[in-house]
Length: 225
Image 1 (cartoon, rainbow, N blue to C red):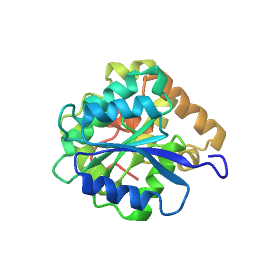
Image 2 (cartoon, rainbow, N blue to C red):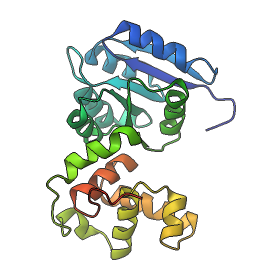
Image 3 (cartoon, rainbow, N blue to C red):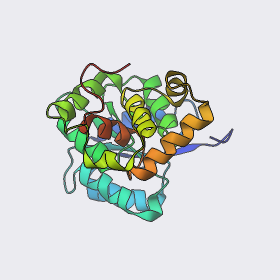
């Protein structure tokens, strides 16, 4: 992120009080600005197309168009390729969060997130990184792993043995630097492998790579770290 740049955010949630609270928290440090709000998925989609923010905070359950469908439409629009979506969730929406990540969301946060975590999340996804909140990631990914596909899943056929190793480490939650150490690679080589995986698996971001690692059985419950 360029020094001095102000990140722009659109907040899409059907609760006005929550939108106001998120705006207040986000704008406290001065490097994030909420440029638009919406109370339904359809209105949110219109605002995103109009404003093209860096980040969208998207509720899951909304009138008119739910957050998953809205996320899918944003991701499918080439004009919005630079927009990162963070899904706002509660503890009873694990399966919906998984659907949102499959639809192309960069990650998810609980609605009771702390102010510092919220601002960090916006900066993280704006920098092109995935956001996997550890407080809900394990439960969501356990849904994927409940009935894992065989390790010879057809999606893995396009990968080399080394690429499968890298995908496994990504699925375990390792950063590029951590997987470089684990696999005895240079950091630059690790980044290259991750970029190649995104292309080969047609994944929008690291969050989707994690889901693929679980769906294909490369990573199983309790295998993180």
